[in-house]
Length: 174
Image 1 (cartoon, one colour):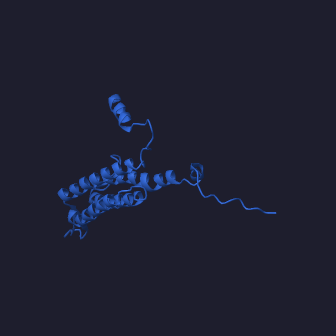
Image 2: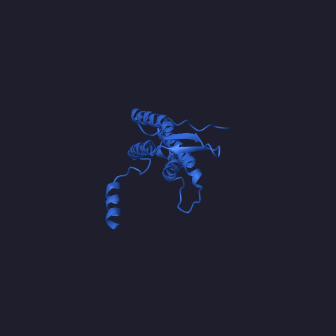
Image 3: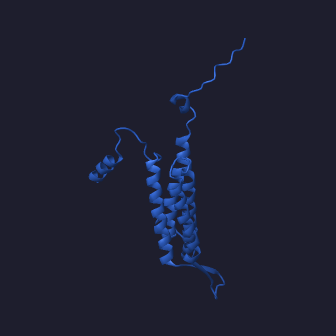
């Protein structure tokens, strides 16, 4: 005769190991976007990622504008994906509001004009506004990294594991 196994009322740590999806989630939903963020920052600054890239001069402003837009979007996605683990939701919401303000400045950072001779639309970048958006985005990103690290998303929290000590050793070796 079939006899069902008893229902567990308490779960052990082993019960969670088989369901733990945090590592793949963090790689796909956090680290992937952190890497993209750095890449978009370089393109937003220079118009191309590698000094070996060959980009027509008239395409550089278009690429920079698109990269800056993606830079902000990537930052917003990273915040959204980190919300599940970071307890201080108010701080994350404040970072989101700052990103919204930077998005509003994105239109002021560029101007599109039609060339009278070639009849082509050209994008002109207001470097002062553009640079400030990059700077403030980087500050938001760095704050987010601190919150993610405090939550154990970047470095695991373990007894006897001192990230500051490891960082100091690395700096001293350099």
